[in-house]
Amino acid sequence: MSHMLYTRLMATDRDSVLEAAVGVLSRRPTAHLDEIARAAGISRATLHRIFPGREALIREVGMLSLRKFADACDTAGIEEGPADAALRRLVDAVVPDAALCAFLAGENQLYDDPEINDLWEAQDARVRALFLRGQQQGVFRIELAAGWLSEAFFDLVAGVGWAVQDGRLAPRDGAYSLTELFLGGALRRSEQS
Amino acid sequence: MSHMLYTRLMATDRDSVLEAAVGVLSRRPTAHLDEIARAAGISRATLHRIFPGREALIREVGMLSLRKFADACDTAGIEEGPADAALRRLVDAVVPDAALCAFLAGENQLYDDPEINDLWEAQDARVRALFLRGQQQGVFRIELAAGWLSEAFFDLVAGVGWAVQDGRLAPRDGAYSLTELFLGGALRRSEQS
DNA sequence: CCCCTTTGAGACATTCATGTCTCACATGCT
DNA sequence: AGCATGTGAGACATGAATGTCTCAAAGGGG
Image (cartoon, rainbow over all chains, first blue to last red; front, top):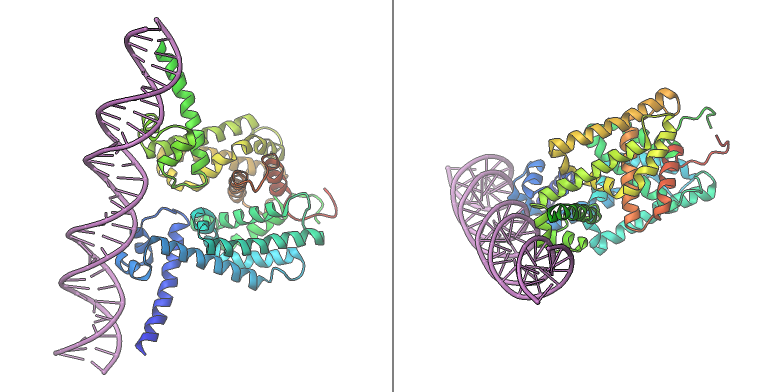
């Protein structure tokens, strides 16, 4: 009985620790465990009790980030309807977790793990497919490779994550700024489409 | 006499080592000194003779990167003429050294150094001023904050650096892809401006 | 041809983050 | 109150990367 309760408490604890870890690691990938533990409000000993070691912690953060990104793609339904509308939905779904994407972008060592790499590859393929579909639908420019659009999109999502974390961008401006710049570009147009 | 010759040799050596270091560090900020030395084609001992230690090496790479970026801003003449044309010139000037920007973006610890931070602040201010001028000239959209445009621009430059380094983007496509996406956005427009 | 300088390879000490352990304390339940 | 479990603080060992040294070899200049 108490076992199940502990399990549930541990679960929420794990996630809250992981989110605190993202906050630190997305900004400083080499942060010490002391720092991460302090950010999570626990001691280094407890951190070690939850995760066997640094490697495991990083891995778990990566898995959480990828899971959340996959969830965002699901809720946004990026394979449904017009590609531009799908992308707008994706932005809205993913910007709240932009810090996770910033972490994924900065922690290249993550992709040494085959499972992580496969998961990432799968999500990346989904996004690439979205851009490819958009080009076939005639809503995205065909002069820019779908792979580049996908890559640039991730870069900007990560950029929003960093900017919000450092207070250079208001959280509520994130989605708008990202969507407008990515879809519309920086140039002002006399003739509005 | 031989002294001056040595000095010159050392100087070119320093720069070539720094460039090799950028190649490694922009992708893996935690790379060991062995790795960096091997990438530069020298031994760890010689690396230590040129730079007192890891910290100094990182610092020098940061200084070189900032210097090169400042040079790119100078050659592009970003404070001259229409802002959109200035930005195109800046892209052309900076894309060859995009890996350096990728390094600057990933090595946040760099900015603990006041001198580095000041140099960066100065360049960032120049780019922000460019976007602000563009907005005043009516060529850049005013719905997007100049600070955000500047930040997103750096993110995309770094993204180009990473993509080129990993072979996901052809070097000669870098400038075009960056300019077109950043200025024009991903959306295709029926009425071409 | 000899000497000077630089380099590379390796051994060695040192530092620091990590991983492991113990113990005292707090909290929650019976 | 008594007990059990989880936690924090700290000591300690370990391992890896760094910093320092020596020495033999290579290359260049006089």
